[in-house]
Image 1 (cartoon, rainbow, N blue to C red):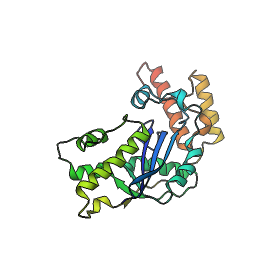
Image 2: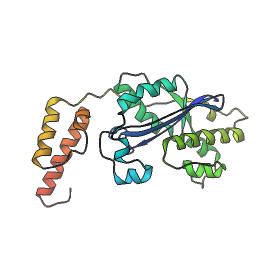
Image 3: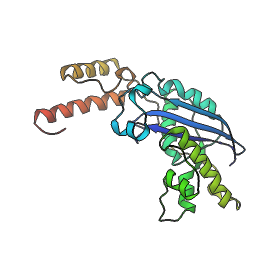
Length: 240
C-alpha cells in the first residue's frame, strides 16, 4: 500500500457511543509522499475534563467556536476520497468517524492498515507497542504526542519504516483490510426529552454539562438517568 490517508483523532474518551471527537488530523499520502494535510478542532458540545486537557493540550476555549463534527465530516470524507486509512489502532478512529458519517447520511465503508498490528507482528514481544515507543524503536523522530496531525504523521512514518524493513516479501500485513464496525443512525433527542432535562437541571440547580440541543435520544436518556441516580444517592447521603 503506497497511497492512503494517515489519520488520528483526539476525543473526550474511548467509547464512540458516548464520547466525542475534539480534533482531527489527516495526511493524504500518494505514492509514499505527503500530498495534503487536513486539520480541524471540533466542538464536542460539552465541557472537557481536566484529564483530556492535560493529555491533549486542548481547552474548552480552543474548541468553543469550532464547528461540530456534523459540519466537518463531509469535508473530511471528500479529503479522504476512496483511499484506505492508516493509523495506530486505526479502528478506534474509524469507529468515531463512521458514527459521525452515518448520522449525516454519508457512506463511510473503509479499509486500511493498522500500524499497531504491524508492530505486534514485527517488534519484540516484550517491547511496548504504543505509537511513541514504536517510533523510538524504529528511530523515528516524533512530534508532540496526542496531537492529531503529529500522531498521524508519526503513523505514516512508522508504516514506511516497517515496510522498508519487512515489506519486500509481499506480506499480507501491509495490504489494506476491510474495517468491520456496524452502527445505526442516531435520532436527535425529542422535544419532551430536552424539556425534561431542562426541568431536572433547573430543579437540582445543575449547570448543563452538555449542549442539550445537540443530544441524541440515547444521550438524553443516559443523561437523565445519570442525574436521577446521582440525586437519589445524594438524598441517601451516599457518594454518587
